[in-house]
Length: 440
Ligand code: TRP
Image 1 (cartoon, protein in one colour):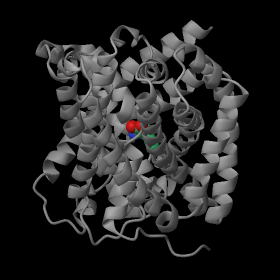
Image 2 (cartoon, rainbow, N blue to C red):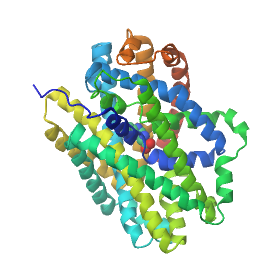
Image 3 (cartoon, helix red, strand yellow):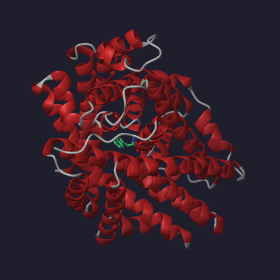
Image 4 (cartoon, rainbow, N blue to C red):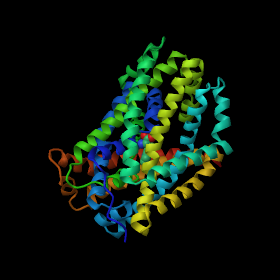
């Protein structure tokens, strides 16, 4: 069989790659959008709370399984749970395929915007979006983005994924902070900051806001489909997992928070808040470019940089999605990395074509795979580690320096995480149903 399992070059490399997976369109836009819709700082506080109460425990569960088994998801679950749990690994792989297929279409748009923005954003940003988001152009940019993702994954854990994350993640962070500072120099941003950072805290007790915040905390950390599990399967057992998980979760939060400091002032400075309508995608690809167009020449540069940042976030996330699928083929079929990458990236690219040709189809894939599958997968994972695995604590303990919060971890996984995720799942089922019925 194949060569010995690949390894990260350094613990920092693993952490940055995991942060790369977590930081994506979810932080840069979905977060701000939800915060704007759901009472600003109240949402931020709730989101932070759910990151601690469900995000961190599930993240630690995923990395513990991955590092403990040192196998890709299907085999890792079989290793700890027996053959009866393989199906969950298959669900993870299916989610990887489906999410990557449409995620890559959206990422293609960001590449397109970054390039076109340099020569000026269209004032009729709605018309521009309608033109580039669907059809042959969208399909081509999607294929280009998939090729880029495949190049990184084909380079392997060290040479491809780790190296890319080491360069791109710090660059992305510097870029975002720069944009936030620039946004602070604009006139008329006061209402934007106020909308973001002050709040009516009674929103905290609103059930809808809670469900949204919990779902976002989960989505933003890339949980529920084995991405973190797979990355952790390339770790040695001589380091801990707990402070790593805390670093990953807090970086993800900080990036989302800073992105809010870019987005809110920009939109309010140009009085476009009313344009932020009923869809996340519209807000990101229509309202914000409108603001950049209003800014004139500076807007070209700032806007292009913003979309480059988005594309970078999307690339490092897409890499982790493809790695779930590729590592499963390497482990399960004994294929070489290169062969797995080429074949599976091609398959995903084909799967994404319908999404590039039809926006409604893209929305449906997002709802079913990006929402439903992930929450369900995370729920099952919590049940698996909370109730099925024999001694998950000892798996975490290898290489660990502190044991203090492990009892709390198991308790959260057993009782708290399942209850919250069942509520989120119920909300997601209703939303999926509405989308399906609305389509028919
Ligand atoms: N966390 C990513 C973001 O914030 C999106 C995402 C969700 C993801 N699940 C994932 C990325 C799984 C990679 C793997 O945009």
